[in-house]
Image (spheres, rainbow, N blue to C red):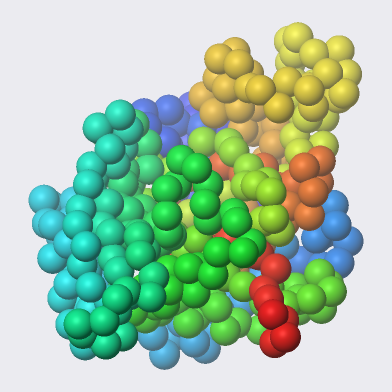
Length: 348
């Protein structure tokens, strides 16, 4: 179990502050390697996080040059670099991708720049796919958190066109991600994916690819990824470290109901509250060090290091892994996160 020391303690050597946007939750033992899950099928069906220590090696080492380049890319972007220029430099040899324009959604304070790309294998011909997108945004609506992410998708995100199983533009969105960040292959071709396909009972594709650069003091608050047709998330730590609180929805509800001073009389009440988190519950989940310690004692806290893989299953709406992320250390990290979807069979 990963140890967590209280915020007011004098932690031993090897610990790092579990600090997110100015709230110190304690000090985490970052030297304890993550343990690999053993009962993969049971964990998948229960929506329990599946951990794989060094699950991305040796591929991560083979792509080390590209991973380091990715870290440098986000540093330039944080310093005011243009997302379009970074992508154009990496797509110089990919003639099928044609820049179609950029937008900024001013209703979303997190969005930095959204690129639109058309697919035109032959110049002068009609595009075979339009509105392939690469969206760069801040992770949090907080100017003190310099964590960023780049998401590769297609169509109108607000309409969730990416969930339409008949729309095969996902192929081009995935190819765009691979062209901009070649280290995508570290995740999309890992052995763990094959194991998940055996458990799931069919082929899976890695789409809606997101590249994360969590900056010191940043991270993501508690959430889940139980979108229709999405079976889970495959996450890979490629540079730096992140600390996670991750557990099935039912176990999180039990922890909420059992928290000191909880207003919920049962796990069932807490389960209902998680479907629509109000301000008080949000504060408990994300801003309360005592609750973080409660989850750590229950074994829900762990640290991912370079080469580690994590799966967050969501086989259905009730069995889904909820998770919260903390950036660790003094340097920004790099990680990839892919949605898992049913892949078409060869006959489709």
